[in-house]
Length: 383
Image 1 (cartoon, rainbow, N blue to C red):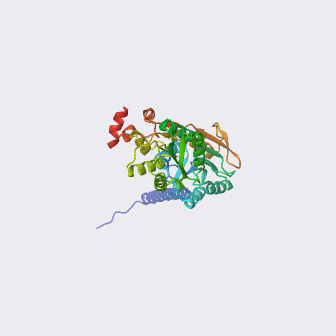
Image 2: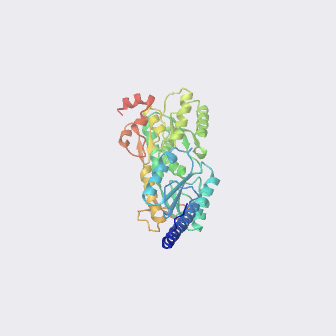
Image 3: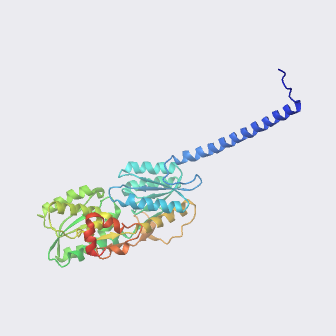
């Protein structure tokens, strides 16, 4: 069979066309390799630990939360609010939780700096470890914002965002006075927060300014006054059981520094089948608000965490972008220098005004509060 002979000019055109295709393909592969290499650099900088969906060009902000035991707020409220506010401001948010371990928090801070964080939002576990984190950050040009808890005795914190914590305590003291009423010689127990938390000191300054007057006048008797290490609710339960034992169950009111400690006291009272007594709290947690609806707790303090988170995020975003923050601040002395601070206003919550805060994003919903067995008492309160 005869073979058809090719035209030399056609063969030359085919060879030329194939060379062009191969050249274009090679150029495309090279371009993709360059892009991949750039992407690898960004991934290494992130360490795969970002809590946000940021791009490689976004400035980074690290948030160091303390635990999930002292209060449910850190994970259920602060984390999502900070994540949302920071990402909306065009920065990459990396949020970690030390779960009460100071060494872990220090490692998280160091990793954040290694990954390129420009700002650290710090909720310290105590001032000593917090000061070490802040000093290390400052030495590497990283800004530090104390979030909710002021770090004492360091000049390395650039800002502080929290609430007026002495006012929180005053509201608790005034709330207990109203709840106890004019009961003569009321026997009062005090459950303070962690001795390593400066906020606990401020809360105590606030409520002592109110209740000490009742003790001094003889209207009330102080059964006991103890601090609860690490805000640990289980330790609070043990401490309050010992208080009840010491007082032969005769306690007429409890100044508890937050809802968790308050619930520990309530649990001990119920275990002994004792009558309800006034108990204070703080943080307006779901548990605390349900205790109020059920009559087991007389008040809590609502701190609008959304405002706190947004104020801190606004500062962090400006600092991360190299801009000068425009927020109005007040100087708060931490023992070494006066820290520019933003302090939000707390408000008391009782059974009479719970409904005023329904719909706030950092306040439990009516549906959650009034779920299950609590529904009947919600109905009685007109909720």
